[in-house]
Amino acid sequence: MKKLNLGCGEFKKDGFINLDWQEQVRPDVVHDLNVIPYPFLDNTFDLIEADHVLEHLNEPFAIMRELHRISAKGAFIIIRVPHFSRGFSHPEHKRGFDASFPYYFNKDFPGGYMGVEFDQKSIKFSWFAQKYLKRQVLPKSLYLASSVVGAILSFCANLSPFLCSRIWCFWVGGFEEIEFVFKTKK
Image 1 (cartoon, rainbow, N blue to C red):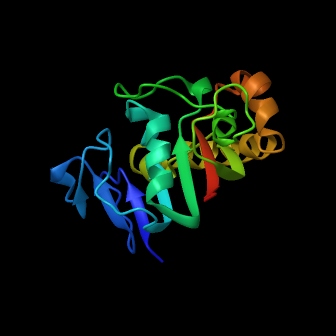
Image 2 (tube, rainbow, N blue to C red):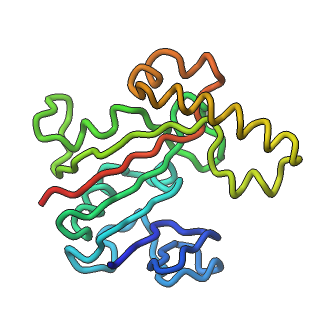
Image 3 (cartoon, rainbow, N blue to C red):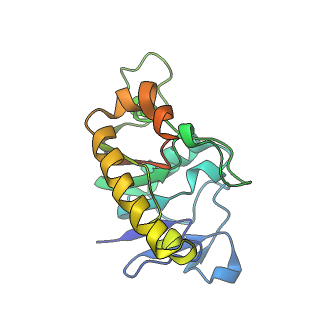
């Protein structure tokens, strides 16, 4: 199984080809993610993960078309991005995302089909995300309390992601992350 960790930064994954634009993080492949095409052949990867990457890039739909090109038939693509309700918490974020993002990869969507099809397998909200970072900077008691509150709020949000995304996400201070799992259609 060929796996790609897109925009790995400091968080390389074993068993993956780790791709990033920053040479200093020593990825397996150095490439500016805004420059298409990526240095891979068509139909290469069975799994692509992009953890908090798309919000930094200029054209997320163009990137999704490129991920479709380099993914094999039936490949899984896991995208984790900030939900718009939390706001832009990093100076380089260009956008937040919402539960409607998968619509653009359905050819029957009249609001703006982007030219490639993915089957949406799941959408998942996280109120307290990227625990691997927070564990390093928060006091243990705050980390544990936030983990418990986050688990409860995330469970409730995931009962109806669309309803959460449109109505009640602001009541809890927003959600840090929304995860999309897609399967390529070719």
